[in-house]
Length: 348
Image (cartoon, rainbow, N blue to C red):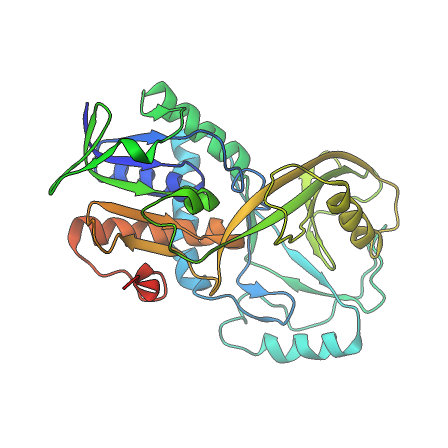
């Protein structure tokens, strides 16, 4: 078999890059062993405002200009709904936070999202003594169903191999790469935190942050906006809500824990006072980087090996632009933006 690209990993990074290849008529084969599930269990929220300090998210506007049409294309492709617009209610815990909200709402980069007033309307089941701030032009992507549909699509086209990728079987030539019986011009690694085992890119400063989520059933909550306080509460429909997320820098397993569940419930109970039941608990490992920027580029020695990784907690926003950056770099020689490029961690 001969293809233009071998892709290793099919989370959001791999999906975005293979979609870019399809759009440009490139052939490819994808290896996915389901060992990484951070994209599937992700919250999937896109929001250009850091809700802890009310500051702009890095590159958010530029990323969304590419990301939102990207998800529309996928919705049209599969005749499914993945992208849901939703308002965000940031619950205040003090007068100081109210004041900080007004200051931030004047920021030219945030004025399209932050409503410059305090909302005091009462929401049944929600504790909001200091009111809340409302954000618009925000939303979330159903990453689980999107990835499942995309994997089935590639599987039906015989472009997805559900098996481990063995680095020892890679043979690097001057203008090609051979992997077992597959010849390709390039390999792109989109493995999430699995990159730690990759002998070609394990020098990159990946930090694995485990995150846990709950799915709860709360018939008396009846909230249509995303709530954000100690944790987020995302409406899923039929009185089900996604609650998250934890950050654990020590536990590298993908198993849900009682500690994670307890933490989420304690934080949820700090601003929700209606009964609910935990329907499901999820866990995954986020591929994050110490400077919270993605990892995009070619290997410093082997030009036909590339990486697209490190999307962190905002993968739905970053992935489409990062994929475009990598494609234009590999195919057209357009340099990757400095803050995206792995050259900032060049191994000498």
